[in-house]
Length: 447
Image 1 (cartoon, one colour):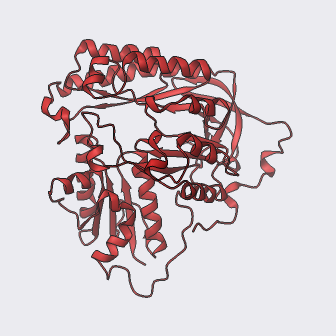
Image 2 (spheres, rainbow, N blue to C red):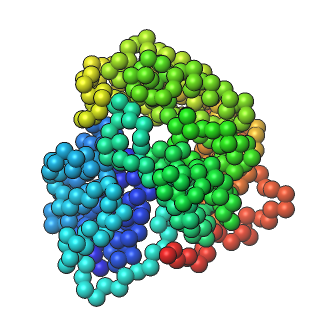
Image 3 (cartoon, one colour):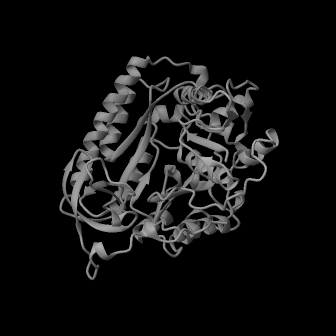
C-alpha cells in the first residue's frame, strides 16, 4: 500500500481543503501517515499571506524532501499559486497544483505520475474526513474582491465562488451522521456567499439558517466575517440561537488613517459602533479578531489607537501578525519602514492588552452554567476540555465517554483566559457512566 503525508499552512479554508485532498488519496488506496514519517507522497498546502508564511512553506517542502529523497512532493495553495503567477520555479516540488485545481490534486497526481499507485490496490470508501475530531469545518465560499492594499489573496484566489447550497447541506448531513454536533462555516470572504456567485439560491444568512436546521447539528459557528457583512439578519440568527454567540471580525488596525491606507472599507468609529450594537443585542457575545502591526503608515500614535480599540472592543483573543510586503500589492510600493524590533515590541504590547481584556471577559462567566462541547482528547492532566458556545475553553473532570458531547459546565474559576469548572447534570440526564460513547457507533460511509 503506498503512503501519503499531508500538512497545511495558513487559514481554515486551507485546512478544510487539505482534509478533502487527504480523503481522496485515502479512498484511492493510500495509507495516510504523519508528515514527519517516510512517505511515498507528500502534499504541502501552502500559504502566502506573509513573508513568514511563505518561508515556512519553503522550509516544509525541504523537510519533506529530506525525510524521503525518493518521494513525490506535491505543492499547492496560495504560495504555490503566487509562484505560478510569477512564473517562478518551486525548489523541491515534483508537482505544482494551481489553487483553482486544488481539489483535483489526486487527479493531477495520477496524470503526472501514472504508475504511482500499484496495480491491484483496491480503492477504499471514504469515511470520516476529520478523523473523529469534535468539530468539523466546511468551506462554503472562495475568492475575495476587497483588495486590501497589503493582501495577496486576490492574486491567489481571484473571483468569488460559492458552493451550491445543496452540496453544502449534503456534506453537513453526512457530518451529522458521523456524530459531529458543531460545524464551522468558513470561506475567504464568507459574507459574500450568494446566488450571484454560484450558491444555487440562498444568500449567506439563508444558508446559515438551513445549516442550523440539519438534524443532529446543535451548533453553527462562523470562522471569520468582515464587519460590513455582519447584518441585522445575522445578528438576529445569533439572538435566536441558530448561530453561536461568538464572532471573529478582523480589525487589522484601530486607526482610521491606517485603515484607509489599507483600503479597509470602514473607520474606527464604524467598527466600535458595530461592537456596541452586538454587545447590546447579545450580552454574552465573545469577539475575537485579527490585527496587523507595522503597516508602513502605522506610527506610534496610530498604533496607540489600535491599543485603545482593543480595550474598548473588549476582545477575548487577538491574532496579531506583522506586516510584510507582498509582491503585486499596493502597499509594496511603500516599502517596509517599521523595523522588525519595533514590530515585535508592538506585537508584545498588543498581546498584553488582549490578555487583559480576555481575562476580564472570561471572568464575567464565573458562577455561570454554560454548554460545552467536549474535545476528543483530555489535556495532559487528564481533565476534559470543553469549548463553550461563546468560545471559552473550560477544563473539568469527567469520564472519556463524554467526548464529542455537549454538556453543561459551571465555571468555577478563571486564570487569565483559562477557565475551570464542574459538570452540571441536566434534569433527567442519566448517569454519564451508562451513556454509550459516541465514538463507538458504527462508522458512517460518506459518498
